[in-house]
Image (cartoon, rainbow, N blue to C red):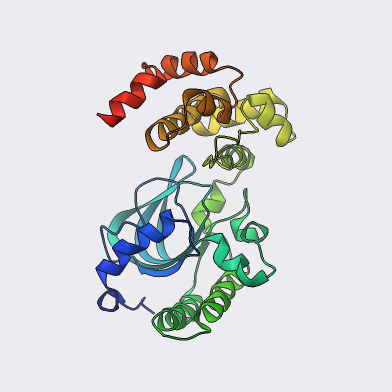
Amino acid sequence: MKIPDFTSSVDPANIAALSDTIQNGADFFHILDLSITGNPIFSFEYSRKKFYTATLLQGDYQLEFEDRNIDISGNSLLFTTTKIPFGVHEAGLGYSGISCVFKEEFITKANSGYRLLEFPIYKPGRQNIYSLTEEQTKLFIEVYNKMFDESQADSPFKDNLLRTYLLEIIFNAQKLAPFSSFVKTNNTTEVIACSFIRLLESQFPIESPQDTIKFKTAKDFADSLSLHPNYLNRQVKLSKGRTVSEIIAARLVQEAKILLKLTNWNIAEISFALAFEEPSHFNLFFKKHASISPTDYRKLQKE
């Protein structure tokens, strides 16, 4: 069963306006037809999104996820959080898809009693990609159809019904088998490496200059994962080709650049947020890895 084409029912002007809704932090839920290209909501490039997703995909595509690429064919469900960056790229004959994009407040609103990170499909270290049979695909498409129809309706109970349909997708997904290609690489080395990457990414984005990351050194991560630092480093190097310290440094530089470019926080505030004891330590670190001082980098971005 193929995913219906909702393109004709969606006003591109409304899609553009939705990006402002995300930025403003309002309660947010939308059904997005992935055949619409160039939209500002569901970027296919590798990045950390500002929302959660529950996405049904058909066809051939490559998922860029946790520092690796996974080739996927057929029918599948993908669940992502605001913590883990990902990207979706065409492969083979291409793909079609439909996605629920939403903020956690949509689920927790009205004291629903649910928190997204309590669901196995959204928990760090758990499976996020599920393969579907034709029969399973048909059942999920029916739910997405009901969800889309309700999203177009003018009803005082619309949000409640949409929330119910979304929870139906989440609950049923937890019964599914993981995608086979993902499972085959889930040996001990991959499990440890992915757990490390997820723990690292769980600290971002940093929302306030009063916040600071908790894990910064190999020992911090090893202690949290109940592993010896040398063992963690060895497994991560085998999987990712880089040491734990190299990956941490690269991620800190990436976040520093984001904060320098997109916020008005001063250097001391950014230094604190990234767990540097002194701004001078942060300056030396950034210049070593970016070949430019934080102040000069910020000036360059504003030119």
